[in-house]
Image 1 (cartoon, rainbow, N blue to C red):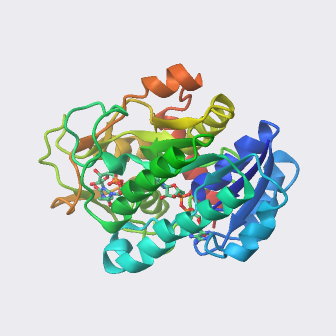
Image 2: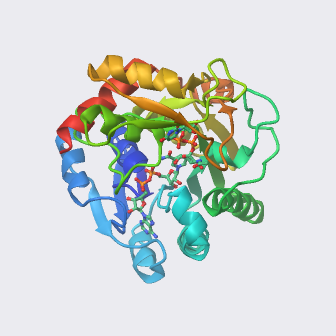
Length: 332
Ligand code: NAD
Ligand code: UD1
């Protein structure tokens, strides 16, 4: 299949481009490089043998997109978005404009061009405060605690409505849990600008000696050791989930929703311990107060994806930490 990948030089997009190309698909990457680097396509080329076709463009540039889409795509995987939670609180209009407005203008171009298969990067953040665990796809959408989270909830709704109005469309909403790790080659990974706000990239910098210690946000949650529990998923497993979803639902009109997680939660202290083991470096930490907007625990029921997509995660926490550490050392 010929697939348009927006945000394809970013963290999850780049790993998915590798998996798509390895599975034999033809990929066209579009990215405005606001949070990634041009060199990623060369690095993808080193991994798979050929670099993907690349266009530096914004999803809101309708003319440019229409021109690209006129060549024909079988599907679009849409990763392009701004994703810094704190920044979204400070700049809600910028976030809604880029994420929601950008998605709407992309969808219009695809509709006009007759592209009918759309795979969307959603997030477990749409569940809000869990009613019970594990989280299943049929649970109600919750309340977001920030504009980034709301933008995912809004876009899911926009996509459901677009699909109702266009019965031939196939929309797949993939709700990611916590993607971490990097490609085992050490050539691509997550490259957060400035001080990371997510746990694993932060821990990586502490192990590397770039930051002094991890601040553990609360040890009074109702979890086995009191620290926050999340479902961490290796980014290569996540990427493979996209290829499985595209294959399974290529010609299958409807709205399909999947959790992409491992089905297992790990606490902040377990991540710190696993990272120390993988890196052989100490990871000092101090416990501080809870971070506003955090839920205590959150993990997926991953059985729907396992059954329908014939996909399952293969990489454990030790591998996630080892690959993150390799990337941390090589990336500098
Ligand atoms: P990322 O920032 O590494 O990648 C996003 C890419 O989109 C970047 O390369 C950026 O330059 C590009 N981009 C942003 N706005 C654009 C625009 N208007 N036009 C063209 N390109 C644009 O982020 P990521 O972690 O790879 O996330 C990919 C997707 O997955 C996002 O939609 C994100 O919200 C979603 N997601 C991420 C996580 C996570 O923990 N990383 C979790 C759940 C969902
Ligand atoms: C966060 C976002 C979520 C987004 C996801 C991926 C919030 C409230 N949620 O999820 O919307 O989809 O990132 O970008 O920001 N922790 C520490 N110390 C740290 C960092 C994190 O103790 O320095 C803890 C957190 O309290 C949490 C766990 O580690 O228990 C994971 O945090 P993080 O990696 O930021 O992911 P989420 O909070 O799950």
